Image 1: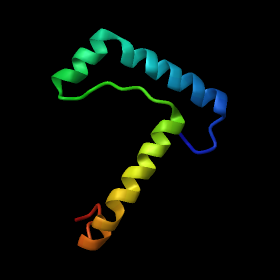
Image 2: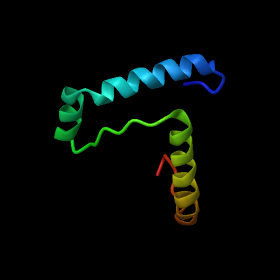
Image 3: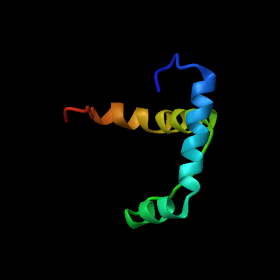
Image 4: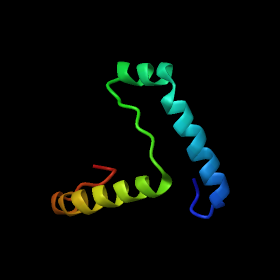
Length: 69
């Protein structure tokens, strides 16, 4: 969602996604693609993305990878 989305809208969408991911048919469908359904809060997702960025950014920069590579 865009950065300035109202918090109540973010919370509603997060809850809806969490409910959808809890559905057995959604979990089974994702599992057929090798994916694992795991809901999180917007704050948990932001923290995960920051950790991943902090971990991988130096390597990506060192090898000179770009989206056009």
